[in-house]
Image (cartoon, rainbow, N blue to C red; front, side, top):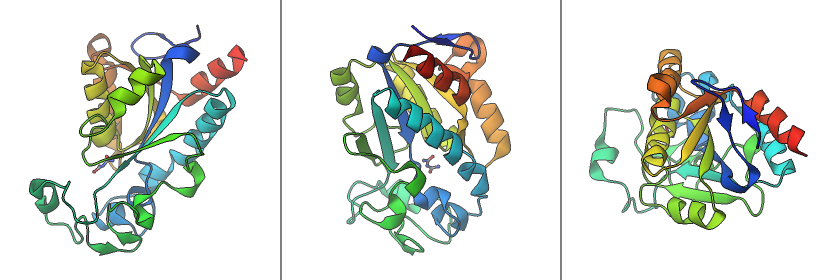
Length: 223
Ligand code: C5J
């Protein structure tokens, strides 16, 4: 089984029990002019993850291992969006409003879908989720059970919101999570740094942290 350098300790995984999770790499969060930027965020902090994630996806696909993409968003009638989420803050645009890329975070809209560079291929799971965590109100647990997955390589955005929530949910369900620092992004550099530290602190309280080249090398060595 390959072992990669990670914090706080080496992380061991094998092909049969490991899936790659790509969280919310959606145009609404990543593209200039989109929802994320309308909230005053610097989207360049997220787009730096696209290139390393594309390289990881290529290696992961080459090894024929399972990939699960998630998308945060809601039904067009917003029936799955809690009023508290809809009302939160005082943004220039709210979920469901018309934005530069269609209605914001609404399923079926251009902005809700994944950026071109990381577009899912046929056969890869694309999981729509109404919450921050990928387990809440989704079939993720059943999907992972069917695959026999016990370890997750976690990537995507944003580090301190949907990545953290999902890793915490997964950790409580017994999964071992390796979060890849160069493939997760926060609009806030400080949250990126502290968010990763929080995962690996206290002996790996929620999981492990590494960089994608070590994982790519480990997959390729196995071939
Ligand atoms: C946020 C996410 N930040 N995918 N969503 O609202 O992290």
